[in-house]
Image 1 (cartoon, rainbow, N blue to C red):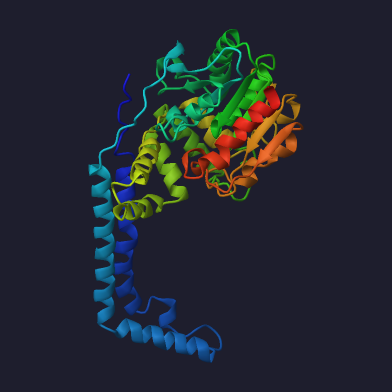
Image 2: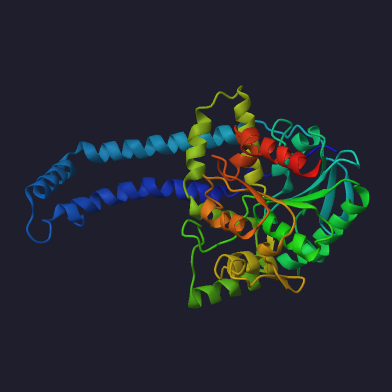
Length: 410
């Protein structure tokens, strides 16, 4: 079955607004500076040093130069044209994933279990993605497919495809995704596979993996936690701290909307790095469109823009329970009636905490390694997405985890 093209719009209105703000703000700030509202237009408080006086005089001289306004307008126009040219090229450059979707061997509601093939006697790996992104970051293209790479190494590969939540999942929180969907998926794999079963969760999927391994310790012989958050109060984690009335209002908003739309989730992520897409488009405008890296860029961006909504229960767990209260690290997150505690794992674990991860900074992920007794830790020099599909993906993650699987389970 051919793979449909992902949504090309994504959070485009948000990107356009964010791109325009600095240009318009620059043109607005200039006349305000001339009117004396700029701090550098007035003497420094207290005794002004010679260096401070010279800086103020140079600033006043610059403001008086009639060429400044023209230069600011020209630069704003140049940046706008460059951004829009990149956007136009991005939308006009054709892209289609060059993979065939593997068969679904189990389905319940919107969720499916995909089987990429493999021998029953080989080690089996069950890849568990985040609930708020499409599964195919694990199978992006023929060249950028973590799932197909593992299969080529002789490992049987299974992938959870959550789909978009529909009526059967509308009341689910993260715990119910584990007990009602991941448990039966893992049971189905265990009945098929004769070799050892390894659970492997990516990002938020790693937390679900921890819970699954604890709720049903009989099902898996190993676990891999890939860029998995744990301590949400780590200073580097972009948590947008809220208190009191803000938290009450946010929870009420989640309830009134029945969850969070994909567009709202995009907005939250882009607030953490507002101009990232702007810089990407400028980079794309300069790319040689015949270079294979262009298709890799498009593949990643289309996946990023092909999000899915959160149910209200998942939104409460992730954005309030985890990000605002730090429930996992404080022993307050329960699944199947149990507190999820990585210290209780008795199976070998593989932990990947990328050093350049901005979504799950290493300070947020590394506490897992300190709580799990039997673990192998790698810290690749890559980002959250780059570890999985970037130019150094093989050395960063693919080869190390394959070596770990064969070292531990064959």
